[in-house]
Length: 398
Ligand SMILES: Cc1ncc(COP(=O)(O)O)c(C=O)c1O
Image (cartoon, rainbow, N blue to C red):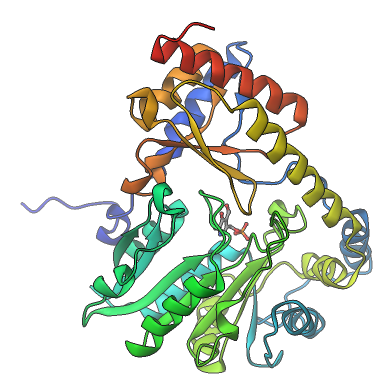
């Protein structure tokens, strides 16, 4: 008799997050009384700005607690279109070209389901955020990693993206600034992605969720603003990272109506709409004063400098200085150990949890991701533990 599966073949193809086992272990150790520092979180350690909370709670108190238009409340779509024009140089029609989402992650899922048939290929530069691969797979697509290397500042080698294009290629997913490396794609690199997309008629989903967290005067460039790209680009963004609103579950997509409309249909049949009063808070986030956001970015600037200083000279470690985001991709290849061995060693012996780099793709092997969304005091202690752990692993005296 044929074995019957409870779980669909589609879902069986998806792997659980490689980071889960480590965070479970960290939680178990903490519950047993161990002093554990976790630098594995992907969320800002700041409060949502007060005026944003006020706007949402006022909306809730006034009875704004029902379904909204599936694409999002008109006021928020207008605020998003204004933001995209003001900050990103993109012109979109708030009526047909903006979709408010219950989290940016949902936008990745929709795009994969809408534009990938079984076996269609989606190219993604790696190291990359863990969910891209699994959401492409869930939709029945083939995820095609395109490796980048720290030695080359995580730039795509010339012709590398195009070398991976086949007759089955449909989509590219790009994330700038990039989780987990902290790389920011330059205008020149984006131009190369645009050239390949135009030449091979590919859709590009550009995840710009870390656009506000940039260092050393870098400017964010939106791929959709490059010639010929508005018609094939879906710009994905959200409120989680820029406004410390991870729990609000709110993001948005902007792009041409021909690409947004199928996604709206998916939303109508799955989520219906994003949370009503959260959308009111998001209007306040986009239209209100940005002091809280500026203070958050300034804190990340200080923490990055602190870690660059404290981690210099740690044996077996070299640090690629992030250009954006609140992540550092630590190169531990000099320790002679794998990502997992170093992560496990630091957790078991030093009580420090970080994410093994190969969770973000094979080319992340030999790296570990540190999130500096933590206080300076915590980061100083974490740096001490990294130094102590790597000295033990490499047999270097302190
Ligand atoms: C690259 C990237 N995109 C999207 C998300 C998720 O965003 P949201 O909270 O809006 O679903 C994350 C969260 O870690 C991320 O790193």
